[in-house]
Length: 182
Image (cartoon, rainbow, N blue to C red; front, side, top):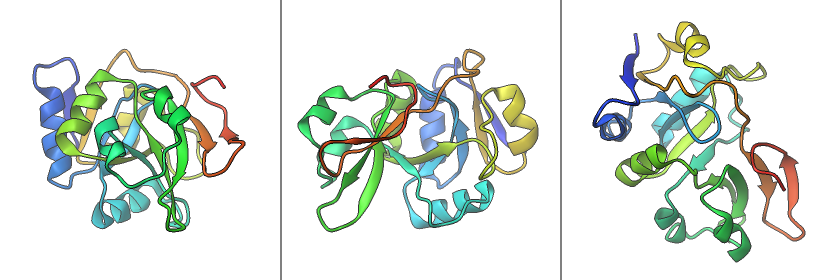
């Protein structure tokens, strides 16, 4: 059974970050929709794939604080960097032939978590190939026994995922039109 954290409680962002640093996997509201999330690392990645029932050939978005992005070694075009934070995910190159989908969320709560926990993987809350669950009431009965914690935010229901672009070459290519209007 998942720990339920009320987002409005004092210290909830610090508590969430501490659970993430312990290697826990949870569901966290963001500036777009709720995300199934955990700190970047192989064990967490494996668990997220298992929970989501997702093929490992499909990678996760990495949410980062802008400061971490600047020291990540990823090639970030200046025009994309100026847009962040925003509900915009960009596929970036590491300069060695590997690409990474990255987003700097425009949400102060998530920014607090990222500054305390470091980069986290995030993916929509659903089983692979199914519709995303967009409210706490829909998420709880399905994922309560699968994750370590859920951050409850009654103001989050509905919404759109982030816009996803490929920024590895110009012109950029829109892969998914979402909350950020391009």
